[in-house]
Length: 351
Image 1 (tube, rainbow, N blue to C red):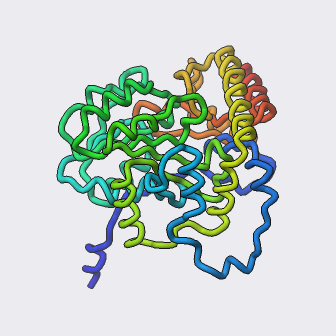
Image 2 (spheres, rainbow, N blue to C red):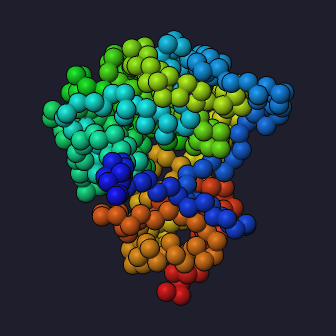
């Protein structure tokens, strides 16, 4: 009588960072930008009557804006509802081989969820003891390659020559470089897209552009890759981008000075905060993201996570092999980071 249950697609879902319901919290667990979007974005008030209309399915205003910003042709740009949407479409579009795709064992934890959801075989080469990718692990036969740069949750960024070596050894499959955090100090792989027609670079507005709530992501690659993505999108849901996101996303690209100002604030705070954490007995890899991935030399990460939460300070803890003694801590404002330092000083002194 319950045979229909046998045909339900069952997956282990991705677990996003906790969104606290209480007020007056210091939220350093989901890598949001503590500074708001540029002033022009905040000042736009569009005619609400326009919301009764479907948005442009081609997302033309945003695609054109991104193409101009990155100095590429509009045929090389794909947009979606956050980079998660772009990446999910990319898995569905490009990873259709019977061979396993490759991504690191410690990385963005949505990758294995999509692979399981779409029944894509995969292997996860282990990061080395310093949490770096071993590029030689990606030289073997596979059905595609994806990795973040900087990696998450480690914050480690590989240089452009390193990235090119992986792409060069995988020219018969699609290679996706997920650059959600690239603006905080890394070197982008975008210069390689003219050289390798199998490379797709994915970006998001959620981190450096302070617009996580509008859900804007995009990919840049050769026109054939972008056309394939659009074909899948139009077969899945033509109207993925809402009108406010299109308009505000395009407007955000016009204020480069504000964009750089907020990024530089976060980088400066990251440097100061890192030194303070070292004095308290924490160690962490050099981060090129808007977070650090820290472990204390005596106190377990899970304990610090729970005690901080009691004080309304939220950081991210992953109860997973190899990283279960690390905390991923978003870089907020100087005031927020000082509050965390004060808590840690007090707690560790009594421990």
